[in-house]
Amino acid sequence: MKKIFFFGGSILILYGFIRTVSVNFNLGAVFTILLGLAFWLSAWVARRIIRYVLNGGIILCLAGAILLTAYGSIPQVTYQEDALIILGAGVNGERLTIALKSRLDKGVKYLEQNPTAIVVVSGGQGPQESVSEAYAMEKYLLSCGITAKRILKEDLSTSTAENFRFSKNSLDAKLTEPYTVAFVTNNFHLFRAGIVAQRTGLQANGYGSTTSLMDLLPSCLREIAAVLYLPFS
Image (cartoon, rainbow, N blue to C red):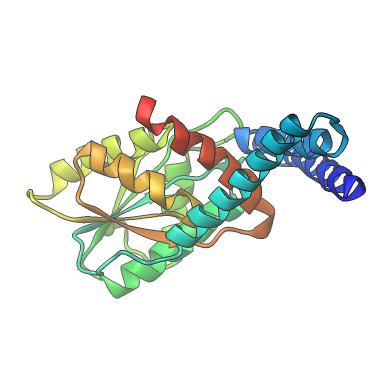
């Protein structure tokens, strides 16, 4: 059992370091490394009570990842909403990340089934990005046949809360209240994003896109921390 935990921890630590240097740095990679260290400690620590605490933490992290992903895999949209918000997820230079492309592809499917809805592409420009996420998202939607008159670009936000707040400002100027909104994000992020949308005053239905296996664990670990922080934010 010690060898299994040590091997598993080593894989997680190595994977966390690889993600740190190969994609935009984020807390998901850090939490992956920390989870790997917890595996290591659980393998070698002598005191039983500490081992129980470590094992409990590992189980809770993995269970949380499963629950977040399962919740986000259930569609909530009616295809009758007035607008769609697609949340940004990072670009490498000007190239879409896998997560962002997944959200955009899901958004295109929604817009094809709800041809009267307008869409807000929401995301600012980070330190490792040559353009804003909103710019790259708009460019991709245009290439997929979504007309420019349907697209609103919100390129100032740097967090989920700002995504919704700034997108709502754009929609308030365009639509007559009350209006309804759908939003697209990755499945692991749907639960928290829905809470944040409600806090912003939006009547919003979530639409979760799939997450690649390479991104799933780091993203879920980061998301678990963000969900736990919600009551304090």
